[in-house]
Length: 166
Image (cartoon, rainbow, N blue to C red; front, side, top):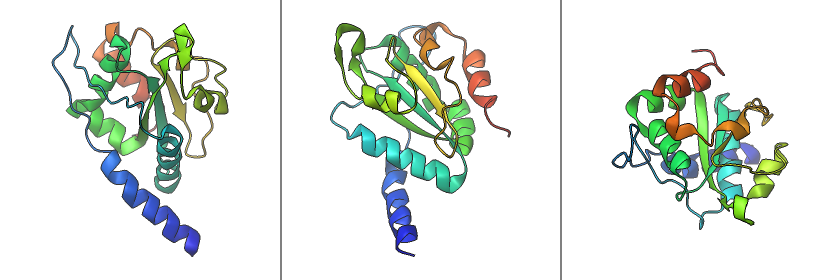
């Protein structure tokens, strides 16, 4: 019983964090958002996303990026649009993890990616799709998002829609 109370408390605390990410004016043909916060306790955010996913039987998305990264901002911007928010919100729990500048040896939170089998962050964003149990489902494509800002809205939408049934 105590475990259920703790999970309920964690879920209640996490719901406000799962709110909408503000969308900013696009620098190109896509919206942008800056949800990456280096001061956040990334391990806690990931643990909460995984706990919510397990409770709701949704999948989790861990977006490992940074506000300095055009592609990270672009993907986060798409996620914040109504079209994506509706689909993602019904199928996924999302956590944004700030990774700093891993390509320059100034990375942070890389241990989170390593926990799921991604040895290093070679580009940002790196996007992990996890089962409700926390198993990595997109090991081959997780590091391929460093061109997210140049991908089409429909391609991005289709990628994430394909991981779960409606």
